[in-house]
Length: 220
Image (cartoon, rainbow, N blue to C red):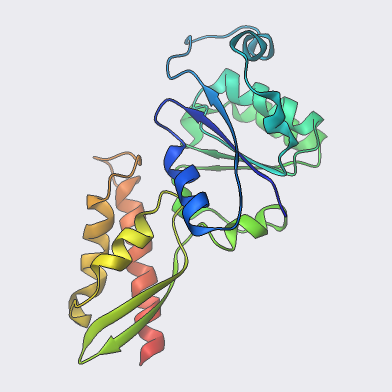
């Protein structure tokens, strides 16, 4: 089975760990970073040794890194590529990475690097298909009775767990109100996605609304 590694930082990454344990057959490998890191780290690989990052995390096939720090993320990518990690997924968006460095690492190795602001927008790739077949852009099956939602089966859900929260709370909702309620429920879920912009949690809500609309279309 594919080995999934999660690098956490403070509060970030733990919901993914819980979702993997609760909703998949994977047993994640976990390594932790301090919540507070220096703004500039001149020797990030040495720094990772100094803070005692568990090096066994690089035995993973896929690593999801919540390092949220350009220097540390680059160091993790470099070590991962040397240890034959197949794919590195970096949540949090482009503001937390050094694109030039990551592009060089990807070009000089066979490792796939994916950067996503929100994990419910994870793209499918050959190297991540075992993970993204169960976690990523939501896919649903919906049972309908008397023009209301009777049940929502989550075939694939957001890594943070918001899809399952939405699914539980859609039962009994009238069909013409279902997609709007789905978006509202996802925004009420305590997701770590940024708020107050058109992206982040609002994009996640739109993705879930679309998933509900697609599922309902199949019931007609």
